[in-house]
Image 1 (cartoon, helix red, strand yellow):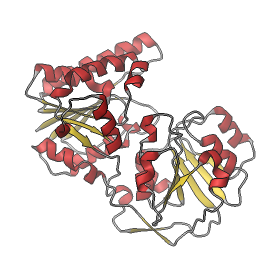
Image 2 (image 1 turned 30 degrees about the vertical axis):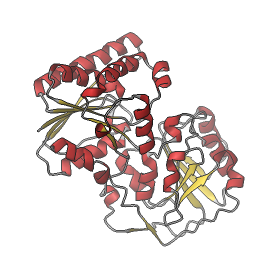
Image 3 (image 1 turned 135 degrees about the vertical axis):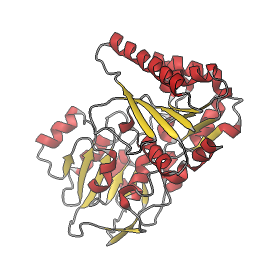
Length: 371
């Protein structure tokens, strides 16, 4: 069986596609896979040491708008050319921006299967106000959804929103595929993980992800943490900080907050082994984030960290837990009062959340590919 995956955005920024490729690699099914994506320069290139999986990258970067648009179209037509040469039985693409070559291939080779997975839910209004190239791709999607054999989102609520937006799509092609880490992530094969450092008196916090004043509670968090050096220490992993916060941390004589730049996905377990609490900071400015249980929630849990998430993120509510590790809802807009009655107990051992695995999340997709 031949499968082509089209993922316009660089693979390094999207752990779910990385995990899916490893699941496919280890699934034991006889399948040759071509992955078509683009380059990035901020992280180490993602690789799969497997002869049946080939990753082909196309350079679409340019600071010139016209040149960049030309490169985007080159990506599309190059991808379509690869499809016609490879002649896969199935094409799986991620997000609307990757749609054009897959849909064109399906229109010409009608017996081939086309599938799509959406990392994010996008409302009709957001499509209308978004990038024109994405609008054009999504127009093609809307006209051809009836030809798809698989359409998936990351949780039930997003899938329901999508179903309500596009009346008439058969329930049989709509699926939920959550963003879970691999079962072997961090080489965790036991049901508990030893704490690495019992001597630190401060609660060790970690935040991994994008940062902005508009979309995250990073300002509120730092303003709270910096005045409690005896209780909290915070490490931030992100591509960049707002300049104001970076200057505050670097020149404000703040010793309990550290900015460590970006981090490769597979380096996360090692980086957080001495942490206590993993933070999710989205403000929930869109439906996509309100009804989001982000991959960081499950990655933190699989590393045995307690998790704090904002009260605005309804998508995390079903994972609230008083077990070890706990999942705690926090009012970050009023974080001081929210933590008045909060008690953190550092145990000598912490339990990981092995039930949240990419193998489980991708099981239906694997079955669909083999049928």
